[in-house]
Amino acid sequence: GNVTLYSTSPVEETRMHGKRLARLVHQRAYSQVKFKHFRIAHLQTFCQLGFKVNVEAFCANQAPEDVVRLEPSFAHILVHLTDDDDDDEEGEPLKAQVKIDREGRVRVFKVTSLAQAEAAVAQLLPSLAKHGQWW
Image (cartoon, rainbow, N blue to C red; front, side, top):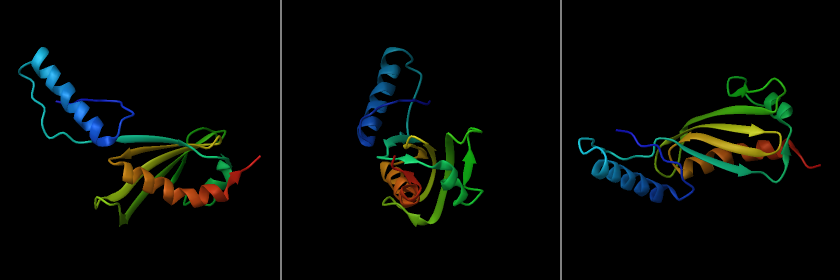
């Protein structure tokens, strides 16, 4: 089975809520259904920078295979981060997708822990600040 859960709670608390939801489904609706091996498959995080980002200049200084334009107007870009050498605190290599828009909104996708999301933003922050628009 599979449970999709959206939450603003901490990761471990969300995992526990997923287990409780699966238990309720099993007890109240479908007794033949079994859930096991609970894990966080994808985590999404959002943050707002204190400045706007010149995404055109940011794209010009990134490797072409890492940056994907999402809109022809350069309103959003998608950055693919892969760093097999730099492991997070849980020992997993960093693999993330980061969506950045002109207004300074940053969304991190396809990570399995908050530490990976923080590492992805920390990796991009110096370059984002360099291409920040403060007016």
